[in-house]
Image (cartoon, rainbow, N blue to C red; front, side):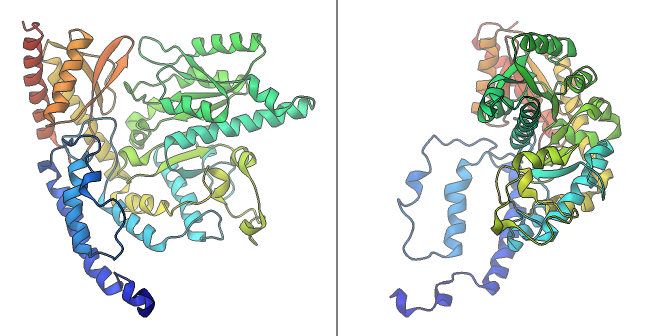
Length: 494
C-alpha cells in the first residue's frame, strides 16, 4: 500500500537515473535532428488519431522511462509536422540550435519564476543586458536601449502577438490619462469608445486580435500596389476619423508582412504619427532578424520615429521558441499602464531606480529564464555567425526565385527581398489551389498559401537551419513535376 512506502521509493527518477536518461535524451534529440530529413515532413494522420493510442486516464502506478520513450515514436512522432526538416518551406522559419536547446535545459533546471528582480536577480538583469546586446546588433537607435541610464529598454515576450497587444494597451492608457487630465469629466469608457487603431490591410491577424482584446476599434489602411502602407492613405484615414470625433491612438506598421514580406513606409508613416501624437509600433516579427546584417538595415529606415519595436529571434535567429524581443523608447509608458504592487510582490530594492520588475512589462505575472538561450546563441555564434546564417537563407531564396523565373508557366508575385518567394501558375485560382493540394498531399515538401488582392498565391519560405541548395533544387523539381500533372488534369497543359 502507498502508506507503507517512503516517498523516495515512489520517485521514479533520482539524480543518478537522470544523468543516464539525460544522456539518452540528448542522443535521441541529436539523432532526430540528424535524421529528420528521412522523416515525412507533413504527417499522414487524421483528426482524432491520438486518443485511441493511449489509455483513457492516467496510470495508477508509474511507468518506466523506457516505456514512455517507446511511445514517443509510436504516439507522438506520427502526428508531428517536422518544422526543422529541410523540406519544410511553410509559414516562416522557427529557429533551432543546439546552444539554445542546452540553455532551455538549464532554464528548466533553475526553474525560477522571474516576475520581480528579487525573485531571481540574474533572470532579470541578464535579460536587460541581452536586449541591449541584441538591439545594438540589429542597429536599433540608442533610445530603445536601457543602458545604465536610458529611458528605454527591452523585454522578452512570448510572441509578437503579445508585444503588439502590450503596445496597444500602453498607448490606450497613455491617451486615456492625458485626456482625463485635460477634461476630467470624460470617463475612461467614453474615451476608449472613441479610440481608433490602424494597421495595413496586410498586417498579421494578431494585430486585429489585439484590437478585439483591448476594446479599441481597428481600421485597416489599404496598401499600395507593392502591398505597402503609405503615409497618404494613413493621413486620409486619420482626418476622416478625427472629423467624426474619434481619437486615433495607435498605428502598427509591419516590416516583412506574413503574406508577401512587404515593408510599410516608415519614412512617411513615422512623421505623421509623431505629429499627431499617435503611438507607432513596429512589428518586424520575421524580417527583424535580417537587420543583424548591415546591408538589410535600409528596410528599417524610419525606425527612429517608433515608440516600440518587436521582432522574433525565435523565427530566424537560431533561438528556440519562445523568444520575442520587444523594445520601448520610454519604459515608463509601458510600466505606467500595468503597474500593480501588492505587498507579496514588493521587495527592498524596487524603489532604488536600479532594478527592473518585468511583471510590469507583460501580460502574465510569471516568466521563464528565457534570456539564457539568447545569451548562449549570441556568444556561441557571434554576430558574424548569425549574419552568415541569414545571408545563406537569402541566397537560397534567390536560387529558388531563379528556378521559378526559368519556367514561363509561373509568375512571381511580389518583390523577393529576404527568404520568402511568392509565386503561382499563370492560371486560375482553382488551378493553383489544386497544385497546392497536390504538393501537400504528396508530403515530400510542405508549403502554405496566401492571398494577394484576388489571387491565390503559393508561398515558399526558406526555413530550416539545415537546408541546403540540394533541398531547394529538389523542391523546385518536385513542384515542376506536380504542376505538369495538375495542368494536364485541368486541361491547361500547353
